[in-house]
Image 1 (cartoon, rainbow, N blue to C red):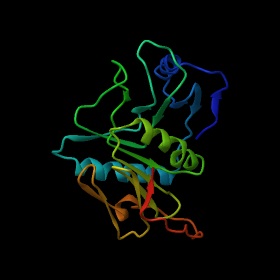
Image 2: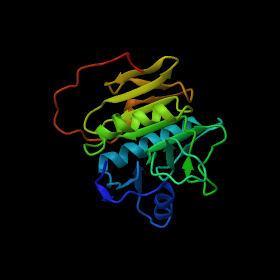
Image 3: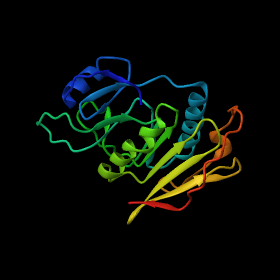
Image 4: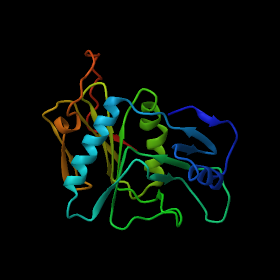
Length: 214
């Protein structure tokens, strides 16, 4: 996550007014506004690879992929009551199944994502894996899967909603294929990391497969 744009506390309405008046992207976390940093070459490559695969897989289905410019709201909000609480964020790729629901008539803040995908970087991985996911799984009842893709080496984390929590599945080999059950489609790791040049090998992360999160 980037540094705060400023230290003042803003309401949701103030944030949305400012965000809609600029071409830069900012996330809103409980009244604080954070400017989003630009992505690396690998980040851009992975985003395009995944978006292409997902879009092709969704042809003829009721689900649709949305660009990184679509905001997602996760948090309580009462229409007509000004508040500084909540999270307004951007995912690297958002998929919604069925009719999309929006925060207001601008139709730029989605309320019912089915799948959210993030390509992790050093500056965002702690937030994306921690606080952001906590809010997603707490407030987005429509969310069925959350996919996290690492840039520096082949490693993908897939969280899938279960009746009693979230199931974590990990993928580390380029010949593996991820089954996105929420979309009924498959995503090969080799396509995710197409044209990616990895840096020198780093110490492997200990596996934590089949972990449930309450």
